[in-house]
Image 1 (cartoon, rainbow, N blue to C red):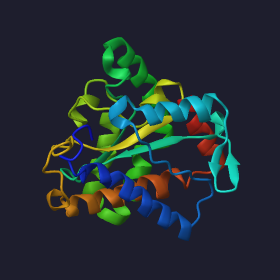
Image 2: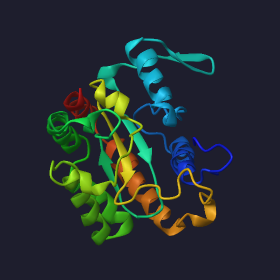
Image 3: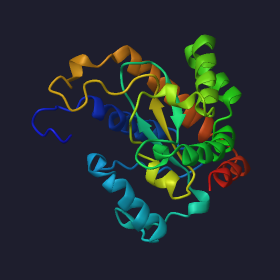
Image 4: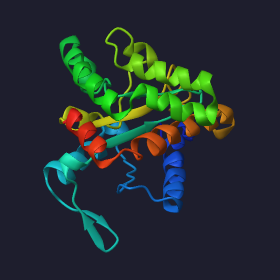
Length: 239
């Protein structure tokens, strides 16, 4: 937070907390694909950590140090998924367009949405996601999430899902031509972020519990359950 000492940062801790939980889940039931979980710094400094990551490890070709290993990313075999959570709503929807780069001009936004629409349809087929979400949360929430994915592809509706302006963790990846999107809480922006009220007692745990199950249905049950040919097709749509 830019207000050091005056903003405890509970809302900004929600996504990292989920990623730690996801790592624990994946360690017990290993997916068919390698999953690299990255926590970035420099969000409030122009997405500095995110841009550094793209420059050094994607375009620079440097290996990512992991213990005694060094892992190199292959842009044609990698998909980037961000997580940005708030407890003011129980719904999550995908987004690739934020206000750091992409939404600065209507022409750019329109073109980006055309690419995103085909990409997200391949990555998260709305009907498939509806089925996976419905299994754990019921048909009404499953249908709602399907509708949100459809709205996210509509140039006349996407901006109503996320009160802005906002920056996306994956904007440097997406704007660099890489297959990337962020799963973001819909209909709200972090109302307590950067304020002295940003404490855990203001977090709606019931909404977060629902979002976690939606995220699992999207990331684990849908994205990581794709066949190799399906995954390759999804990545190619985003490049």
